[in-house]
Image (tube, rainbow over all chains, first blue to last red; front, side, top):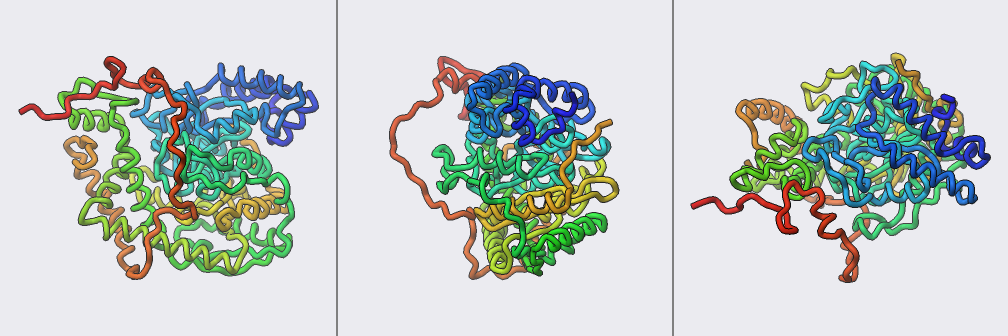
Length: 487
Length: 85
């Protein structure tokens, strides 16, 4: 019954309603596939069999009562930065080994409330810092399409799980591209909402002004449904918007006829873009034009400064967020250290990996007196310029399209020695975080046999526009996310 | 020292080289004239949000201490804060 692990959530929900499968059977089929494939893919850090058995049985009762929603009984996976009560959550780090959150974060608890079934916790770069999942302190995750290559990151485990048919939907977080880039590299759909659309309560913070939670799925519809169920105001996150919850389930299927889609020349010709990626994007542009969209040239003149501004702002925020890991209230500790300074030093020396240390150093430096104006304040001003670039572009177009990543999935180990080359993975995605925009990556063909992603960015709160373009592309191109045949 | 990361011998050279490369890239920000540009700390329209200061349910003492590496008499155990004289 491997077909069960190739379905979209919309297809599975229909089978569940008809009674031709059950939530328990669906979850079991996924658990079997995980048992078979995950020793090679390594998408999961931990499985939660007690949890899914109980949740799936509950979902079946709910379906029988005729109270099922679109995600009732759908098996999902959750990135290791999202707190689930009682389930070990470590942000891919040794410093949180053994941490069992005393509460469940809002996004996850809304999906649980909708009847979703949690299969397990997925691997990620430590504290979501990375673009390949190689910074996980546990093990690297493999790309299901080529096990010698990375799945992207930081939400690489979540992307790989959906690509491998080990989960129908998964959750990730996106601070500079950590949902969209792995979605592109694994050939699935991944969406980052507008900053404030989804509550961050219960998310282990990396860079609080940039972080957003979003879904991975194998169809635009599945991503839209998941996002809409997670979105909406939460009094427990002061930055969550009090706009009404996203209602995408009605009008985003309208197609692109008459829409203006902007192609930023700085993204189109970004340094290091592979010819095969460019060719796939060219075909996608043609598909959208043939579907009735007007393609317009736009410009984002400060693109070249985005990475630099991002690598001040994100490390600055992370250096203050990670100061809470002091070995006192939770996580790794040195209770027998002679004094508190010694305890901090020893805990962090053992608990933080090299990328985390690098960013804490960079952030602490950028915020220190004497350098604050030159680095942090400067970067915040450049953030304004980047946001204005997008504001200007959106006066000329309804949405922006580009490649999601300049390259396809790269071999394991090929960028770990050079941090800057790893950072460049996010050059087309991090602008969306600096400006707080919604963005999606959808599969748009292949280069060297590996998946390429098309990114669609919209104005703030323009999720409906983004989804509409993505869905129209998916339909017109026929390039739907597929399940990889692993091994 | 500021971040209390506890670097080991040899770490400094390793990070110094990598961080110089990253800072070299970051230096391009100085090319931009931002004299008249206001900084952006957060990008959406939400301003300070206040709520009524009312007691609400929260974690119990036992729940709050459940993950503590060391607890004594219902409190977190902390290493000595003051240096010995």
